[in-house]
Image 1: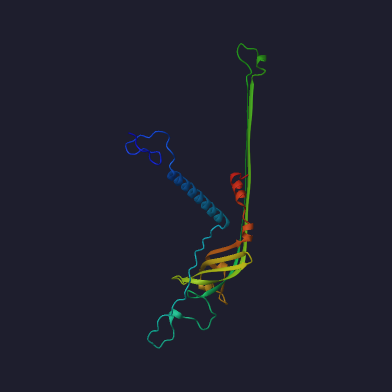
Image 2: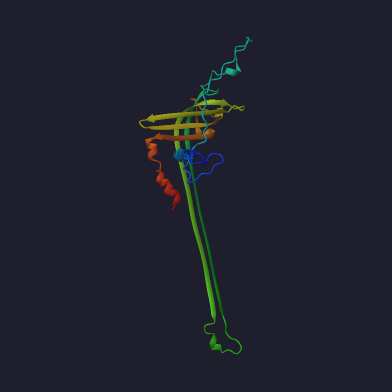
Length: 255
C-alpha cells in the first residue's frame, strides 16, 4: 500500500519519502526577508554615520520652553510695599533676574595655542680584533686573521601644533533658571535662513548677575560653562563635506 505524497515532497506520519525533496517556499521567503532586513539596517547605520560626520554633536542641551514665574497670590496688606518675589529696583536699568527674562550676550571668543617639540638621538659604535701570533704557526699566516665591525643609529623627530579660534557675534538668550547662589542659567538659539541655507547659532552658560553691564548685556568672557554651537544646513553646508568614497579611501589609505 502506498501512502499519498504531501504537497512539499515530505512523507506523512510514518511514511518514507522517495526522490529529492522540493524547497520549502516559506523557508525561502523567510531567508529573503532576513536578507532585506539586514540590508536595511546596514543602510540606516551608514546614514547615521554620515549624519554624525556631517554634524558632530556639541554638548548643548535642548532648550525647554521657559515660562515666567507666576506672581504669588496677594497677601493681606501689612503696610509694606516691598515684595521679595517680584522685586525690581526702581533706580537702575533693567537687568535679567528671574526665569524668563532676556539677556544680551556679546560673544567674543579668541583662543590660540601653539606647541613645538624637537628630539634627536645619535649612537655609534666600533669593534675591532686581530690575531698576531700562535705557537707553531708562522707570523705571516695571520695577514687575514682580523675582524672588525661598526654600528650607527640615528633618530630625529620634530613636531608642531598650532590652533587659532576667533568668534564674535551677538545673541539674546533667556534665563532658564536661578541657582541658590543667585547665578543665572541662560540659553538661547538663533536661526537665519537665506535661500537654500540655514545658519543656526546656539549658546548656553552660567552668569553671575554682578557681571551684567548697563543695557542688560554681558560679554561671553565673563560667562562660565560656555557652550557655543554654530552650524549650517543646506546646500552650502553639503558642499563642504567630503564625499562618501573620499572618506572611505582616506580611511583605508591614510597616506
